[in-house]
Structures are given as structure tokens and as C-alpha cells.
View 1: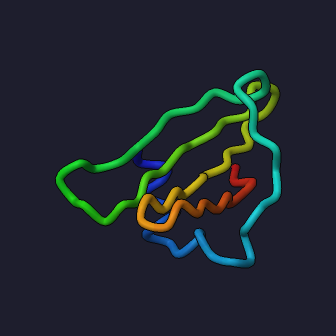
View 2: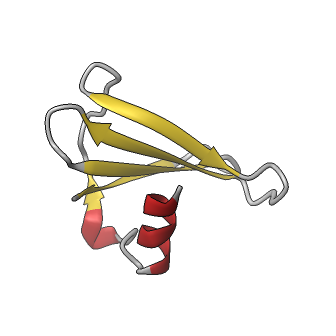
Length: 74
């Protein structure tokens, strides 16, 4: 959670950091973060590569069904 909040607060989830990486459970561990109290429709997934320390963040917009992936971050 702190990793995602850090990237949000330091404006790292921007177009320049968008990624087309194919993230799979075979190669990455994953955790999800969403807040059911704040109904903004956003959910965040943090992916960590099993072979190195690279991280990716996927932001899912539940209002329109779109998602974007950002990274890699170390």
C-alpha cells in the first residue's frame, strides 16, 4: 500500500510512465488495493516481478471499465 501511495503522491502515475507490459501471476506476485468507503471506482493492483525488484501498478477505473498500467518502478 505504501508503495502505491508513494507513486500517487509523487506524480509517477502519468502518461510518460505508462507501460504495455504483460503481467501474469506466473511471473509476478500481486496485491490489490481499493477503498470500499470511497466510491470513486478506482482500484489499484501492485505487481512485483519474481525475478527482480521491478514493480508495476495497474489502475482500474470501475466507472468506465478502463485500466492503465504504469512502470517499471524499482
